[in-house]
Length: 370
Image (cartoon, rainbow, N blue to C red; front, side, top):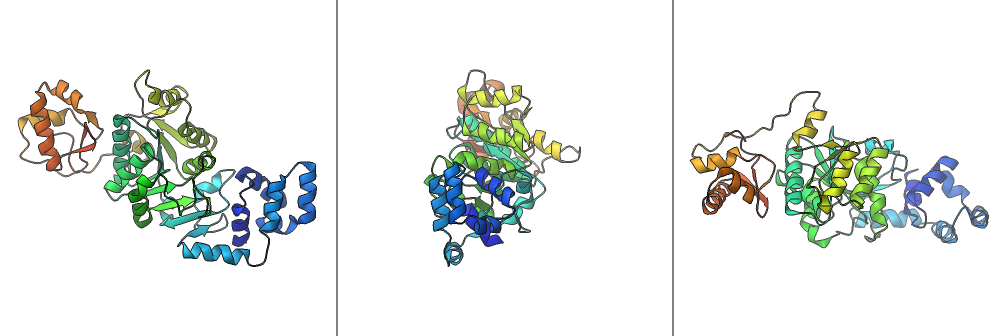
């Protein structure tokens, strides 16, 4: 039966929704394969129920040896696949109407069966603040056992994966192309580490290139694999909000980081909050919803005993969430030179981190109550 799921999924001239309707109508992918012969296809084309290109593709792919050729190609590319009838198919995806008929993957698929999976998504061209927030949230969530799910796109997605990878946490990427393509190419280091320590998945065969039409469809998988979706920055009309809409349809929880009024990159998140999304100002806001009512406390090492007075003053105005250096200067009342010097020293000692230039946060290895 698996090979028939593979065949039906492979058809590119039909969308997943149309395939799902056909599958439910005929009962199984094997029945679709057997009953969609030349006569049936011709009748459906004539009635307008099937496009000519889709009918031609169905008939052209039904030849002896197709399955063997395709599976051999997957083996050569070291790509595995699962279908909805397999025990290791991610259970969360079975809850959605148009679940992928085949899920290709590289890496450890079993992490998607973990108790808590959180999607972290947002703008492809975020602000420095948004980038730092995405990385900080993901680092903390991953350090508390959550699997970070995102789309490996530029911007917030990349920062989400990076945040989890910084502490060797578990993270999964859903691609809008076949697994042979790393898109964008700048994310290749993330891609390699995902294969080694996490997982990359796609409903598209390895030969499918990253084209625009694929990405809105893959967004339902990002939300489908997750218990909740966190939106960091998003414009009023964006692919990020498509994922949020899919999450709502799937019954997933939506969290959003509030942004500045009037900032285009805050319109999407602030709009979600107005519509009922949970407003969050720290990762603990999410974790506490999934820890059976017990308050989450991040485990950290004891502080450096040789903290100076100015360093202590800076740390008292910081948390694990990133803060802009100008705000630290204003809040501490210290000179620019003194604050920069102290931050540089603490960064070298691993007390603070600078996820993006100009934004600082307390490293997870240290307490924030110094």
